[in-house]
Length: 226
Length: 226
DNA sequence: TATTGTTGTGAGAAATCTGTGAAGTTGTTA
DNA sequence: TAACAACTTCACAGATTTCTCACAACAATA
Image (cartoon, rainbow over all chains, first blue to last red; front, side, top):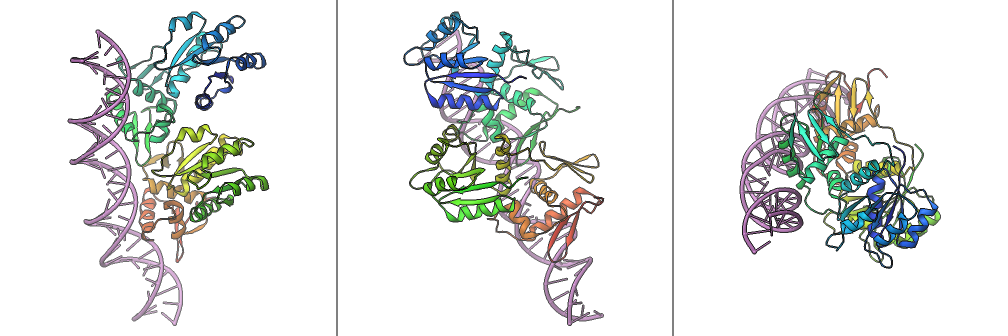
C-alpha cells in the first residue's frame, strides 16, 4: 500500500495529536493544520490524499473550509464533529464531504472510514481486507460476519475486536494491547472488560476454538487448519 | 548491535540504580538524572538514544520535562509511572512520549519495550529475534515453542526462562542471575525455585540435554551440534 | 569410604489468573 | 420517559501456575 498523507484540521492541538497518533500507528503519514489559512497553505504545499476536517473552528468553520477547498480540488474530506454539536449531515455532504465521524471515535473506526472513503473515491487501489478465515466470513463493507453461512450479529466492540484479532492472527495479544487499539489510548477502565467481550465473541463464533487463552498474557486468534 | 545510551530520569536514586542494573545487563550504556535541570544538561552534554522518564518528580514533573525536550529534540521517550499513580496515557503520548511502562516492571518487559520503541522510531535496525535453536523452534509473536515439530505448552516462567537461556546460550548462569533477570530484583523467594522450573523445562523439552547443570554454579543452555 | 554440600524430584500448599453469571451503567430509540 | 441494547464492573468458583518443603540421589573432598 502506498504511503498515504492525511491532513488533520482541528483547532485543538490535543485532538490533532491524538488523531495523528492513531493514524501513524495505522501506517499513514500526517500533517496538521489548526485553522483555515493553514489548511489552504498545506494543500498548496504538499500532496494530501485525504483531509480530516473538524467542523467547529473559530473564524472559518469546517463547512466554509470545505466549500473553498472544493472550489478547486477534489481531495476526499471526512468531517469530524463533536458529539452533541449541532450539525447537519446533509449540509456537510452536500458541500462535498465524503463522510463524517462523530467524536469520540475509536482508532479502528477512524481508519476504517478513511479506508472506505479512499476506496470509494478511487484514490487508492482497493485495499485488500481480510475476508475468509476458517469458517468465518467477514464482510467489511457491510460490516457483517457470517459463520458457517449463518450471519452472526456482532456489537461494535465485538466486531472491532474480531477484526483486530484477524489482522494479528497467531499473535499473542495482551489485554492492554487490545484495549489500546480498540478502545483507544484514553480508556481507563478495567482490564477484565476484555474478558467479558471475549466470552461473548467466543459464544457467537461458536465451536472452532478461534480465540485461545494465553495464560498470564492475554489472548490469541488462531485458525484451526492453516 | 551498536551501543545504545539510555538516560534514566527519576528522583529516587534506588529506582535509577535498579533500572540501570537491568539495562546494563541487557547491554545498554546508562546515565542518570535526578531532576529536570540535570536532565537538560545530560541531553546537551552526551549523545542519548532514549530517555526513561519518571512522571512523578518534585519541581518539574515528567510531562513538563517531556514538553521541553520535545521543543528541540526527537529523542525517544518512555514514561515510567508507578502503579496506581493517577496519570493520563493520552497526555503523555500527546506530549511526544513514545511509550509508557507501569512500575513495577520486570527486566524483560523493560528491555522489550525499549527495543520496540527504538525499532519503531527507526533508531536502530530491527533487532533479530531468536528463532531456531537445535530442534527447538521459538515463535515469539505467538509465544509458542515447538520441539521436533510438536508444540510444547510452556508456562510463563518456563517460557521466559527458555528465552533467557537461548539468548545466553553456552553461558553458565547462576540461580541468582536467573531470578534477577526473569523474576526481577525484588524477588525474595527461595533460590531452589529455579530448580523446580528447570526440572519441568527439561521434561518438556524432552531428550536433548539442552540444559546442563554447572555444579556449584547453576545451569547452562547448550545446543548439541552447533 | 565417610562426610559434606549440592542438586533432582514428587507432593502439596499458596498464589495468581481466567471464566462466567449477574448486576450496574450508560446510551439509544421509540 | 420507558424499554431496550451495549458496555462495564463485580464477585466468586475453578483452573493453572508458582513456590516451598522434605528427602533421595549425587558430586566433591578428605
